[in-house]
Structures are given as structure tokens and as C-alpha cells.
Image (tube, rainbow, N blue to C red; front, side, top):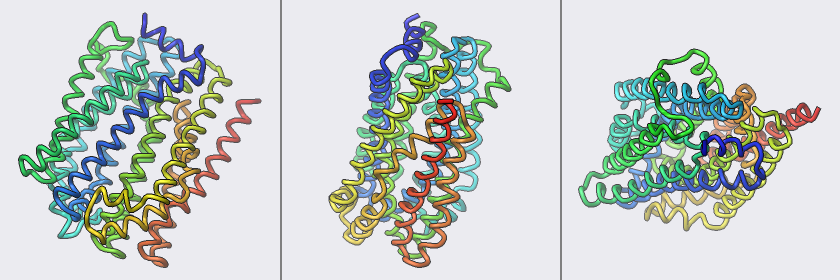
Length: 447
């Protein structure tokens, strides 16, 4: 009953307070996740070497693809669950939970088998050289073996937020980060496991929290819980979840392709250390993007519930608040990139050549950050209200229609700087595109 009252409050409580209530735990959790990745990179860069950072950067596309399959199920199902809870359809909500569990099991196993079978050819294609392959290989072997855990962990955490448990979702993520931060230096420095140690720490930290999540969803007092009869895959639940989750999936797949092209271009025009510079830049970009993602996750159940309940005024209000907060966050990122690039790069490495490359990249890539939050929120908003087609369109146009041509043209003219300039150029175009689409949606709902 308590959980049902919590979900019902999504349609009645003050929207600003609701957004803070849901977003703050998510922001903390997402910030912790990004710090988790930053900490790994720092330990690897300082404890293993500059080339190890480059090797780690080579693995980003595979990591993104793993996240893509996780979001395909978890994000799609959590949006669907928010809509069903808004409609008071608790039987369907329980079936969604069971189906998510089974789908993550299937996708996690299949993905791991494929990656492990073709790992080295994949890494070479992604931009690895003879110098960076050993680091990328050692890291991804462990991560791929633990991929099933990662899929389940991410999927169940998304459902925790959707069922009115943002604090428990936050606790799960933060606990995973803390465990990882403790184990990583022990494995790298104490046990001399090098980059493998960082990967082992990642898998163990997520495994411990997955056990905790399963305990929560096994409790019959929870608004939805694991029970017999819900694990059999239902065609409508699977297709609806995948349709809604197709937007973040497409975005992550496109991001993986883009990172492959970036790594290949940087290797060709600047060498292995240029790839390492992108690894540093990407970690900082990830930090601010994850904060905005946390805001989006706070917005998602509120927007989804009220859209399902046909309360458009509340939908518009939560969207406005989220855009304002996201713009503030990304403006902070802009200031860091413009005024403190050396301080940031020096945290990851002592190699002066790598630091110099990272400084140039940070300054150029972060130049359009103040407008990026709007585009990110708009794409997530369409996903939150179940309009998968528009969310997919926004995701793909940024990556494929705008960024890809820039990456194919600019480096040939400006070299490594051309790679960096491609990102802000595409951000300007995609923000204009998002603004047009959002305006049309607003006019439609108003009428």
C-alpha cells in the first residue's frame, strides 16, 4: 500500500519537489557511476601507464554496446512500468519485472559469447595498435565474463526508480562505486594485477549489489516483486519494452560507432597518445552527461505517470524544470573545460605529451556544453512519454546525420583538432533540431 501511495503521488504532489525527490538520488547515483569510471582511469593511468589509458579508451565502444543492450531492456521496461503504474495496472507491472529479468539473462549471455569469441579482431578494428592491444584485451576479457551481471544490475536498478524507490537505486549505485574504489587499488597495486585488477573490481562490486537488488525484488511487500508466472516472456511486454528502449539503444550503438571512428582517426592523425587524450576527455564528458542523465531519470517516472494520466500541465512543468537544471550543469562543464583543462588532465597522468593533447581537446570539445543539456533532456523526454520514434530520431540525427559527416571531413583538414571540432559542430545542429521537434510537440499538446 505504501508503494502504491508513492507512485500515486507522482500525479498529485508539487512537481518541483517531486523532481528533486526523484532526481537528487539519481544524480548522486549517476555522479557516483561516472566517478567510478574516472577513478578506474586514474588508477590505471597512474598505476599502469599512459598507454594503458589509451588501451582503456579502445574498449569504450564495447562498453557502450554492453550498456546499449542493458538500456534496451532496462530503460524501455522502466518507462513502460511507469506508464502501467500510472494506469494502476499492477498485474502488468509484475509481469514486466519478470520479463526484464529473463531478457537480461538472454542478452547478457549472447553478448558475452560473441565478444569473447572475436575479441582481438574487434579491438583491432576499434583502433587498437600493437602497443595498446594487450591492455584492452586484458581488461575486456574480465568485463565480458561479467557482462551478465552488468545487464541484470542495470536493468533492475532502472526498475527500482520506476517503482518509487529512487533512494534504494541510489544506495545500490553508490555502494557499488565504494566497493569498486576500495578493491581497485588493492588489485592493481597490492596484488599487482595491473589493468585486469580494475576489471575484476568492477565485476565484483556489481555482483554484490545485484544480490541486494534481487533481495529487494523478492520481497512481497514491494509494489512489484519476482513471482511465479511472470518469467514467461509475453510478446506485447517484450515488444513494447524494446520499442521504447530502442531510443537509448540506438543512441548507444551510434555512440559506439562514433567512438570507433574517433579512435581510428586519432590513431591515424595523432598516434596512441591522442587516443589516450580522448580517453581523458571522454571521462570528463561522461561525468557531466551522467549528471544530466540523473536528472532525466528523475524526470522519467513523473513525465511518464502524468502523461499516462493525461495531466499535460504537469508534464510540461517537469520538462521545463529539467531543462533549466541540465543547462546549469552543462554550463559548469563548459567552465571546467575552458579554465581548468591542465588540472583535469594532470589527475590522470604525468606524461606531458598526453597532458598537452588533452588540454587542447578539452578546450575545443567543451565549447558548446551550455546548449547540450537541452538536447539531452528533449531526447529523453520523448522516450519518457513513450514516443520512441521521436526519441530515436533525435538520437540518430545527432550521431549519424550531424556528427558522422564532421568526423569524416574535419580531420582531413585540421588533423587531430578536426576530431575535437566535430563534436561541438554537431551539438549546435542537434540542439536546433531538438528545439524544433519539441516546439511542435508543445503546440500539439496545447491544442
